[in-house]
Length: 344
Length: 202
Image (cartoon, rainbow over all chains, first blue to last red; front, side, top):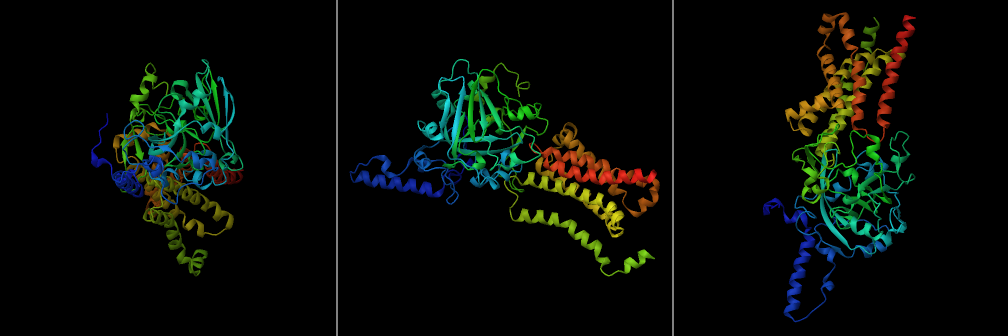
């Protein structure tokens, strides 16, 4: 159990001032109303989204890909105040989360995804569900999201390049989504694919690209069904920007960031382990499991510490990396009999 | 006679100060970006990449001066060659220092491990050691003292450049565009020398 000293985190770091002010007004008004004997349905006071742990700075919120998104984002359950679905560590600011990205379809520089993705099309969007499921098919995103209530989760994100962030995602558990398609007993793995949109993705058009697009990732079924595994459709209370994997992406917080595949258009359930993009490119550097592990050597980057972003030159936060990115309690049991150095 | 004449040419006295100032521009630009807080959320990494890229660019510029002189017949190119070489070393040293201080926080055991265990870093370091050796022996007195060996030693600039381009591919992961660009320029510069050497001895 992680107990934080109250001084570790400022309320201002979590909740924008306007939001907690509104909350105070809400309490004051409620008290006045109750004193006056009036009973109003709770929702009349405002949307639940007001209590989110983090909202995008005004002026930086996104336009929704389509109008139905607005309704979907009306009600979002705020993150709880304790681990594992929340961390009290300082959030990485919105402008850093949305301007420092690895999304190689848009280019290799960290700023390419935000600078070169303005033409990216996210509506209409559908996801093909195939393989070992009772209900395969190509589903429109609106139908996929319909039964799911959105919730907020504040997770650490650890990139294999040894930097890390803390991000407030909006989405729903992948397990809830998977159950709807009724995987058969032969479904041992689920494979994911990112969209290929050559017209809007300059990285794909590059003649020197060495990736065999589309980008592919995969999870073992128990990993996919883990309570931490999340499908994100937003961050900071708002719709996902293209560079963060709009309109829908995976978030697997105990694995290196490249496992959390973006802009998903296909999920294929299968009996055998799928090929994954980085594993195909450089198997000695990127394993299938890619669990965050400070003790497992990586040929390119040291994994014992991480640079928590944002940094400035004068206040650099270089912190120790934790096994399974600090989510050991929730996930370690899945790898009990495995040699983590061999199955990296 | 010709050198006296060219020295007398107006404006030539400004050549070295001009090249000197131009070589400091990338550094000035980086300082500006630090002051303007324009390096993004991971400034240490950004500085390491930028100083590394400028090292490689200056190295290629240095290597292009001799061919430019031979092709154009203008001696000015070679007059600034030593300065260009020393600025290459200057940026390489900053690059190395940024890596040691900002990325590895002077954890000496980690620095040692990195230098030995990661081939990309070892190659960059080998390239730096060559540049240091060339820098130390770049004075007129050293040129005189070393005689023939000076030229032999300074041919190490070629492996230094090759190691530098390989070292660059450290940061390339999905797209080899940059390695292709720098690699082609280096191939052109080394190819020119090979061609001259072959046609001369024939």
